[in-house]
Image (cartoon, rainbow, N blue to C red; front, side, top):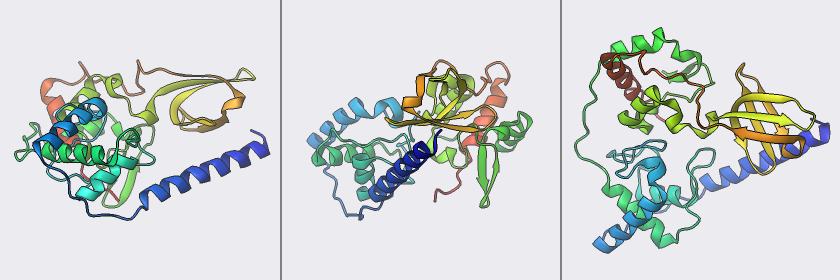
Length: 268
């Protein structure tokens, strides 16, 4: 990459960071959510049309966070929840609801609050045995954990420090037996070919109108301006993570899921 291209890419990255910070720095507000049957019905309709792909029809989570919990980590207040729906969470897969009016945003927020379940089903499985399986199968080679304020492990897979707060047990089980079913955006296997004919394979770290950043399977990042690339192909049919279907018996799978559900490092 030429020096002037590097400078342009750096300015663009700084601009994106500034926009993300500005969005998150919006003043917090008290919001009273509409809770009439009509409002909840409209909120449900919007939710089912826009949110179920990631959060599931009953909010139990999947690709997105589990919304059926009594307390949502990043939306402790109704104002926080409405703001997240409206502007999204910069740097994550949570987009803004640009297509919704403010009234529709609050209706969806009200419906999301109604999804909270009083009784949380216990997860079967032995946490200690699951931790032993996590270590035996060397999951830390790809996944990061933050425990007692210290990060350990690799970074070729998603950070699991607070995965038990963000994903349901059902989703975690599916991720273990069928990893391609729900690939996080930052870990989609991607192949890029430069105009000069050089091919790079890895996972897509970032992609926008102007640039693409890939991390190869050795852990090295590669940044390219789009004009320097001939093609970029993402393959959602496979995952860098192996399937544990057949590698773990039913009891072991329960134990590993129980351990993952137990990972609830508070988000900063």
